[in-house]
Length: 167
Ligand SMILES: Cc1cc2nc3c(=O)[nH]c(=O)nc-3n(C[C@H](O)[C@H](O)[C@H](O)COP(=O)(O)O)c2cc1C
Image (cartoon, rainbow, N blue to C red; front, side, top):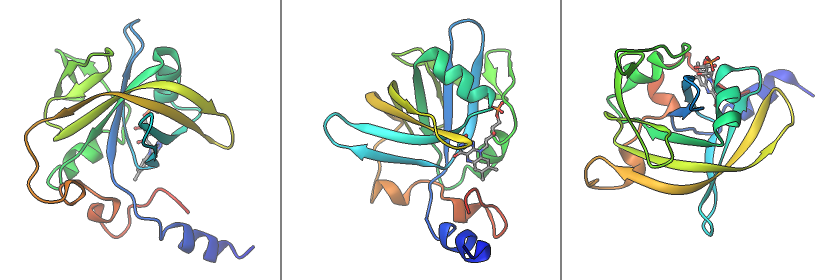
């Protein structure tokens, strides 16, 4: 295989940017910026995401069996960069960001324009990132969206010419 072609072609896949959060109920809270996310079924509503198998986030999601995907708005690049680093919880905030517990117990970022809460239904353990399948059990919209919902959210290409996760 031509590795340069593999890298370039896989980087043609467009991605949104999300903050994955989870709380294992034992004092461990995860919040990580992820892009390997998509919906994969209507009924039941399923999402899948690729989660780094050796990350703290993966451990907490597996223990919690629930997670939230927080959407980021076009203007929230700073939040994307904040959650590329391991999360730190203090004074009731995750890495300085206010949050509340959702119906499943997963943290919902107050400033996120939307979020879904999911129950883990399967994990596919292949490669250095494992696929976590989640059934959407609750959804939060900060305020009604005008226009296309997907036009309102932050995308990988908004983060600059040198930011990629893929290839
Ligand atoms: C542009 C970009 C995209 C990322 N996408 C993912 C992803 O889809 N899945 C993932 O597990 N980690 C992804 N990461 C890495 C996580 O953001 C990072 O490992 C995490 O925030 C560190 O937290 P932890 O190791 O404490 O869990 C991405 C990082 C960058 C810079």
